[in-house]
Length: 219
Image (cartoon, rainbow, N blue to C red; front, side):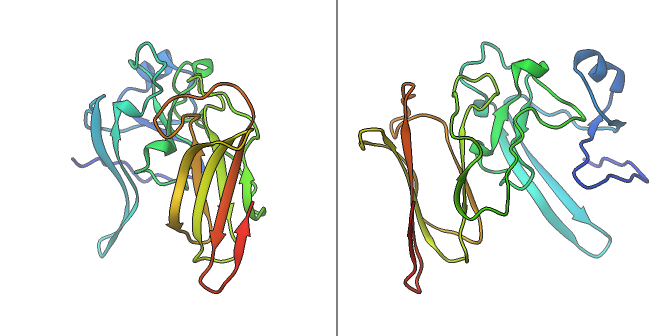
């Protein structure tokens, strides 16, 4: 399916909604910048999307995702009209944990505007950091997951990330011996290894890294 629009200039990190009917979209949601474009029908249940950069000599895949309606928040009474949002453009689009249902507070979609679940992070920090030290996995689109960033001093670490309750009992194995580059992102949805949502309380995040050259890190 070929979608053609142009010439068109899009600034870096500028949100833009592409739609066949700008009037219909703006009557349903609060919208930002929009551009008309002929588009294929996207099924609600699942489909594969790819974003390419290309010219006549080559093409490069910038991002891709085979989305699934099960990626929506389980607390939604209805998924109709609710957008799946990517929390940050640099995250892997193929990872279900990268996606989240749009917030109730914005009417379940933000076409042409910043995603309601967008994550921001200070990339100058090193090793282990959190977007926020608290979260509420209730499906309202506001701080539904705990976002953990690993930014080592060099690539090549073997990483393990675990969640414990305040008494030191293991709750969740988030990452089990992953070989990482110069950064890594993982989220905790508040569930244990069996998928059971945990109660409100204090929890500990433990990150352990070992490098082939002998460097060890534990926090």
